[in-house]
Image (cartoon, rainbow, N blue to C red; front, side, top):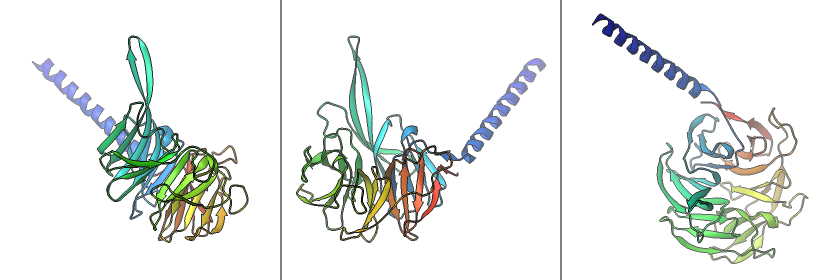
Length: 325
């Protein structure tokens, strides 16, 4: 009997030690900074207190505050290639590209699929819509813009079109055809509604930012393509500030170009300071978000896994490669 009681005490002692070690490890992990791994997209909540970033290579969405303190990281087993991100007062919407692998009669087949997923701020999945068949309405999307009624506008990059998706996941309408004329699209990578109800579209491979009506009527281009100030080369993403000024991240020119609310060119600026681990002067500028009070422009550099922060004048104020808990 005494030997049995001794064994029980030993087991309890060992269990207590294991739990204590586990708690220490978890707390230590929570104190360690989170490093980015090839981030590609960034968005901010309407009150601008929460910023979301797609940490592409790590297959997660990371939330942080304006002091770059980590809030949480959202993960999901479906996350594979996230190329759409937006955030509202209550929801984070993610467009995810993935591959569905199946086997029949010993033959392995793979089919592209797209997920439109809605999470709350804690990372819980609220609802999702999956398009997995060959006739899916969206193929390899590049951006999503969440509307107040829960519907979404999607830049369907591979199909060279803009798609309107209802709050129930149904496709309402779409427009766009492949081509190089002004009313065509070639791999659109960003789309947003303007204050007057038109659509701004980054027509990346045609080197334009274009304006369309919501029915797809072409209205005008923002600027000519090129490398001179006021011209655009491979515009990738953009954001509008509260005055309607437009900030465009240029993948080709490795800079940010700014246009006023009448779409006149104002200025351009580039990161002057790179992260310490950078081994090249090349930059892959992707997602961009503009915050107010005080004004900050945050731009993602996927190549160097960091965020560049600029003030209202385009002066660089920080390089962020990690978030503190």
